[in-house]
Length: 621
Image (tube, rainbow, N blue to C red):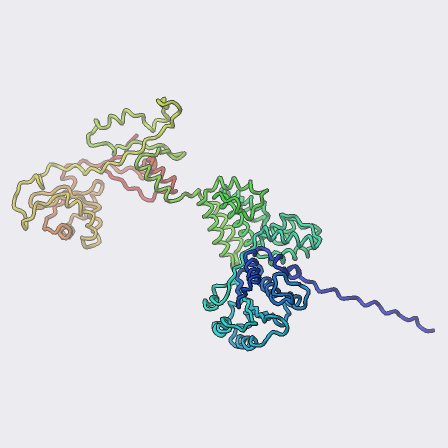
């Protein structure tokens, strides 16, 4: 019994190879080019006016249309109906150029053909006529990768090529091309494409692909592309491969690993409110969802850039924030002055650059967030200097910072006249006794109570000295050494701070710090006494050797011979000085000064060392 014949199984057809979105939707006409209207207009005019140069250079970042413009321009020149601004797109030449396979349009990769031998071969082939087209066109991509020898070998042919040869160059780094080559080309700089134009182009692709996409989702993709349409198309291709029926903002953030706009806005609000803990919590949530540190910082920089332009009043320059989210930036602008925004941008940008190649990306982001959150409200240095000058002149009311008591009157500010000079101050209400009732203004309306500016400190009065013989002009005109006029105490006091340089030895600075010149006796004898509070230190210095070195130092400074005599405080009948008050009391009294309070408030100052004159005792009130 014969077996039934088995029918052959139908042959399964192989699926057509998939073409990515960036290649499938590459512009084929000048009208389809996105964001490069200035270049398109120039190339159209060159064709219309028959002013076609021998070499063109297209400069710009990746994915902005350099190769696309070169191919469209080549089709316009070599179309069977050309040269024309509207190539037919159906002839063999147009179709071959669109696919990069035309025999007369030679596309060369500059990175792999960068030697002198390749350029020599190009020059030999350039002498041959084109096979079927009107022009033989050499398109060299990444031309800056050519070696110096290759550029030099190309110069002559580039300047005077055969009439049937045209050169098209493309580069992302025009600064690496020799100036001799640049001067022989017509250069066109392609700008980065704005997110709005990229989002519009992506929306047209989604419509042709039959995919529903939210406009805000396409805006996120456009911002992530960074001005490159090809990058945006590649990202869209990745999202289309997810199989989602609708592209939403959540899906885009999930697949691209970017932080959501709501999280970025919340983080900005936390940073502006000096809440580092809230910012770190938001960072942890983003890291748990797979957001990369570099992407998070990049999103913060984009949003903070919009905060800056809004704070400066350039509302039309907003790039990242959507109109729906725009009101949420108003509190950030109100809390942060422009200088704080600039400082925050600088901090984030520096840490973003340090993320490259770092194994501690999250730590760097946390450091950046903490530094930004601790930023105070910065003000220009010029404004601070102007305010301090106004405070010193007494033209601006002084408002003590909150939590610091007003200044108490110090005994050291009393004038030399004694109690009589303190009478007007005693009549004024004391600032330390609490709030005073406001006086009725004479001109109508409430007048703000102002604290008077602190009086200029009086110069320290020298310690009282016992009666001594008159010196200088008061002394009788007697014979002096070397025929010089009598030595004056004021001359010694002027050079006294320079003793540290004039006196040899390690004790030079101690002399000027612990001793005081108090009188000049007849015969140019300088009398020295210890400064108040430095009796023990002065006794150590009052040795014959030290005093002799002091005489030599003063002779160098005054250019005259003199003698020095040390007079202890006990011998002068000076009463024992009261013990020094504790440093804490000195610091408290100093911090009560309104001028000091204002300096602390403006510059965030802190006390390092407290020095005061014992001859001006602190007030006990």
